Amino acid sequence: MRTGDQVVQDLPWRWGVQGRIFIIGGLGYMFDAWDVALNGFLTPLLGQEFDLSTGERGLVATSNLVGMAVGAVAWGTIADRMGRKKAFSLTLLIFALFSVLGALSPSWEIFLVLRFLAGVGLGGCIPVDYALVSEFSPRKQRGRVLAAMDGWWPIGATLCGVASTLLLPLNGNWRWMLAVMVLPALLLFWIRRGIPESPLYLTRMGREAEARAVIDDMVERTGAAPEPYEIPLPVAAEKKPTRGLAAAVEQLRLVWAFNPTITGVAWTLFITVMLVYYAALAWMPSILRAQGMGDYAAFAGTTVMNAVGILGVAVSVLLVEVVGRKWVIGVAAPLAAAALVVFALVLDVPAAALTMIAVFGFLILVAIPVMYAYVSELYPTELRASGFGWASSSSRAVTGFTPLIFGSLLWPVLGLPLTFTVLGVIVVAAVVWMAVAAPETRGRELDRVTGAEEPAVVPADKGDKTAV
Image (tube, rainbow, N blue to C red; front, side, top):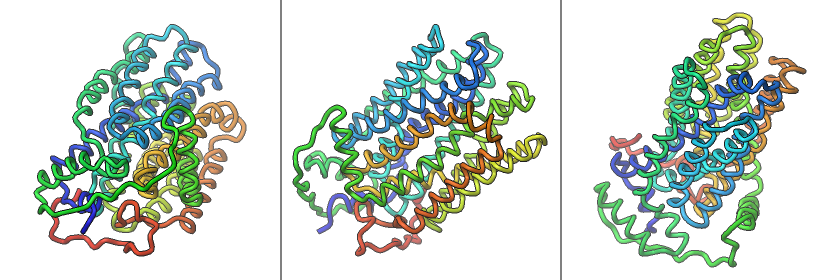
């Protein structure tokens, strides 16, 4: 007899069932992108209003990204200990509250504190949303679904760029840039209350009646043939702390104890790829302004970089189940870093520079969606949100200081071409390690990714017209 987990992962895809989870989860991810992209637009405006040095301007993004690093750990732990659904709703509420307060900041110092706290709330969106969406998705479509999740990122970043550009004529426009995204975030918080808890999570927690209720409802709503299934008893484990720093530290220990090599690959991929992306995202408007472009041109150039990323996500969705996760990441990430090097070399030629910005925006958004899908699949259900959260947190902790180091040390001392070359070399090192040390997850059943008995590829159902 099959298990409830297997039934869920073999259900047909329906937009009214799994698609609803995908859309609501993706909208939260869209606000994550909007907020991170906003750092690049806020940096020059805050620097001008508060007369900040280049290093101080870097703190605008640093405070937000470090807050996200803290939030990724905290909310990943909450999601694995207390449930996906609770974390799913509260992350956006905290983000919206401190974003409103940030828009009212009377000073730069208070602004930094509030941006940190907003980051703590929003930092949980990615690990929690990916854990929830992956656990509701059929395994035949899971790679495409998780890659498609990242399509919300360039949409959010592009909306941020459009809104920021349109708000430039307003007095005190950086405050409106913060405030304008709060109302839709609060609306999404209300909508998220209707999302069910993950049946895979309920099974692992021994909540059989709740798990069966969710699974039976999904079987009925997708039109699948009902069948008997079993809910295995949860594996007995020693009592673990459930609150505070002790819980987060315990989850970190379990993440590394599960498989040190896989966790090392996951962290290295996140750190290196996101280091390149956040460096470009946080400083591109300032780089273009330093090259002599006005605010409108600099903001529009950065917006183009984000908008082209929508095409990159579409390509990643097409490739992820065809060539596999590792190949897409291994090719697209180094090429994206190379595009930034070329951009720095042709910066004196505006048309060529803008072209390379678009090429970078396309390639990096081919790599990142697949990387997110890949890392979320590497961990078992009881560690999925924490494993993803700690990987995300490691990258946010490192990249959180990148805007500060980039603006005060790397760019002024090494120059842009050499700085981007160094970043590209570490990306290549990371994907080489992934190629030799981590398994391919394409087509594998969740919680059996590393099992030798599981086939590497699940044959596609040629008659299935419901794939994403």
